[in-house]
Length: 126
Image (tube, rainbow, N blue to C red; front, side, top):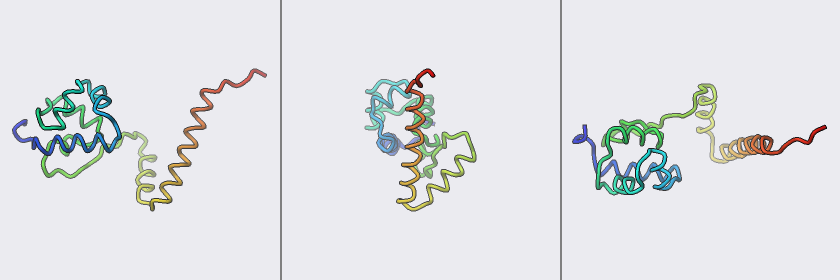
């Protein structure tokens, strides 16, 4: 399998996906259980990750293993949402115009913020 992996393309994909997720090499290394130097070597095409590391990378980066290792594979994200109805709603939202998506994101953010604050604030005894 290793000789079928496009080494140059793999490093670019790992780096591009990491940057898209806005995580550092250090954060990625912790998430996959690797040394930070390895992440740099993967991204700079110095070494090819083992099969187990490739699997962990695909999970953390949210793409299929096929996309990660194949030269011309189409990018396919793996949804990390178990609720199929919620996933369906998010797919519909994703097709809306930018302004509508922004409003929905702000509403979701406000709901989650309120939830987090409610769990932190201790209600006074009555």
